[in-house]
Image (cartoon, rainbow, N blue to C red):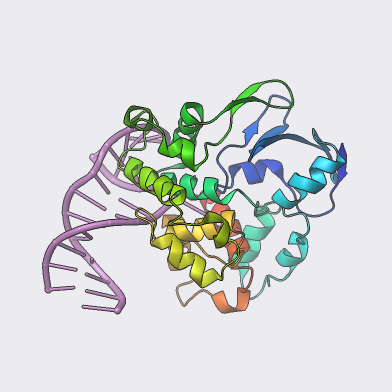
Length: 272
DNA sequence: AGGCAGGCTTTTA
DNA sequence: TAAAAGCCTGCC
């Protein structure tokens, strides 16, 4: 189908933003986007039209929500004052096109446990290995093979050898225990989306291997609490270097997560 | 209570 | 060799 889309949407920027790790750019500039049991091929045609491999029904049912299409990112960017906050203003201008995807919470949880203390290429590699070893082999809309993200049972059933083959290092124990916690319902993933922000945070950090940073990422990218504000090494530097007298977190509620993402992507680019 | 040091696997640059 | 979208334990 051809999709008319008049708000911010830059596929390349989203793919590089560090919020998702399995988007793949194809030769023609389109992107392969796996999500749950589905896979979308999406390509930009003009400023506000895109070619999608799904039909209208599939878009309404799956991808509209995944792309957070009902949120007006342009107006959220428009709330930033150039005068009061030139750094954030510059970041948002440069990173215009980023959206916060509504990813699968389980995938976000495992992905961000894997992410700790590693750079993005290494994260992508481990996740790809995990999918190859425990996911299901599927075909994308172009008929090419890819692997789905394995569910909790599939991860729990992995042999130590297969898990070690994902090059997770000390994190393999975290992954194993988290999969077990979800399987035996000591963590109810589905309930997380329905509880308060505070409650969701508390439940997440109670997991072995999940601290404040990873929990915040799961909240922002998996549970779509767009006010969650993950502080990693880059954001820490931003707060120290650009906001020595304090960051106006309260003024930016409830959009702190979106603004964090602009700053994160922008600052990384500046320091590459 | 809350902060700090050291260790942890592996990859990347 | 240092750093990487950190967390855990132990210590104060």
